[in-house]
Every structure is written in C-alpha cells, then in structure tokens.
Amino acid sequence: MPCSLPAMCDAQRLSWSGDTRPAMKSPLAGTNKDILFPYIKDHLEEHLSAHWEEDECKQDVHLLKKQVEEDLRLNRACAQHALDQSGHTDEEKAIGEVVDNVLWQMASDRKTTALKQLQGHMWRAAYAAGRIKGELYQDVVPSIRRWRRQGLKVYIYSSGSVEAQKLLFGYSVEGDVLDLFDGHFDTNIGAKVESKSYERIAERMGCLSEEIMFLTDITREAKAAEDAGVNVALVVRPGNMELTEEERSHYNLITTFSQLEVTAGV
Image 1 (tube, rainbow, N blue to C red):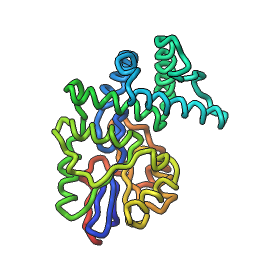
Image 2: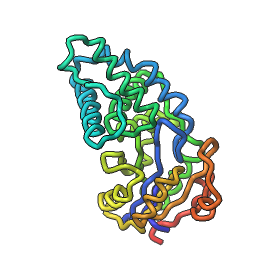
Image 3: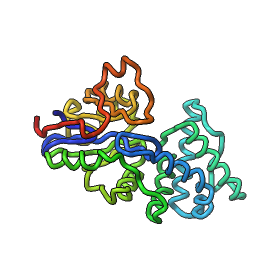
Image 4: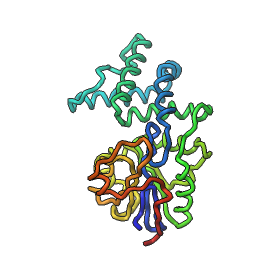
C-alpha cells in the first residue's frame, strides 16, 4: 500500500491524513461546524475590539486587506472595504468593516489564508479557556494508532490553518492527540483543489506522489490529488454532499477509517 493521507508510511514512505477543517464535517473531525463557526460569528467584534491595538491583530487585519487587494486585482467578487487600521480615526467603523469582510468571506465559504489565520487565533483563545473542544469521529484515533504501530506516518493537509489543526487535536474530546501526526500542511502550500499543491506536499515530504494515499470527502479535492498522481479514497460520512453514480464508481469509498487496511513498505 502506498503512503497514505490519513496517513501512513514506513521509515522511507510517508503518508498524510485527510482534511481536518474545523468548520465542516471532514474525514477526521466531527460536527465542529456547529461549534467553531458560530463561535467566530458570535465573538468576532468582541475579539477585534479587545485586541485591536495588539501586533497579532494588526497582522490579521493587514492580511485581510492584502486579500481584498488581490481579489480586486484579479477582478474577483469581494467585500469592498479598505480594512486599514491606520487609515481610520473611527476605530468602531474600522472594526465594523473588518467584521463585514470576515462574515462575507464565511458566508461565501472562502478558505483564504487571511480568514483562516484570524479564525485560528480566535479559536486558540477559546480552546485554551475551555470554551470549546475539537470533535473527532470515534474511529479516527484507534485507526491512526493502528497505522502508526505498523510503521506508517500520518500527515494532515487542511484548509484550516496549521495552528487551527493543532488546536483541534491538542484540545480534542479525546485529549491531546497531536502525537498521532508527523506533520501539518495548510493553504500556504496551495489550494486543496489545485493539483500543484499535492505535488508540493509530496516534494516536501520526500515522497513520490504515487506513494501517497489521500483521504478526503470532497470530490474536487480528490480530482486534484488524482491529477497529481496521488492515490485517493473518498470518505463517506453522514451529512456529506451526495456523490453521483459516476463518482461512486470511479473512487474507492470507505465509511470509516477502520475499513482501510494498510501494510508498511508494500
């Protein structure tokens, strides 16, 4: 079995795990969308007001501003706000513009690095305070521990930031399970629907694309990985988008990680 993306591999072969998006149901994480996204919406203005003059918050807003500039340059639809802390004498108005932009991005289901960074910083504080915990499917931890006993390595590639990934698994309902993973990738390496992203990850891991198995529940991601020469399995979880008959016949389907049998070095 090639290296795999829930992730497995022996000393020479690597593999990585499917998406851990805190915001939606994914191969690893449970219904975190019912907890994490509402938390951002409910506490965004409060967070910005409390941390507006701090360097980390300024960096978050700067990155959001750069995203708007990029969207305008490429003629993409975007929330038309300056998002410039230094350009406002009215702090309340400036914060309101940032709130509008972030909520617009969330409503548009965007996965920009700027959005994910701000969300990650907010979730970090919430996890540390015990306000939220990462939900995991029950089959995830025992399955990955089994793969690791077989000498395989596990990596995560998620649209959620690396920081958000580590928070979810560091403060999960199963406790701190970060020891399950050998590394983390996010959209800084590229979008999950672009085949080049998977080529870069294979290179970063020191692994051939065909030695990787990618687990995902999103067919657009599956196609991008497949186009890069990566092996793919679709994880079918309750509440996921329905697959077409063509997709069902084309991809290997599993409903739990326990169905995936791997052998290191094969």
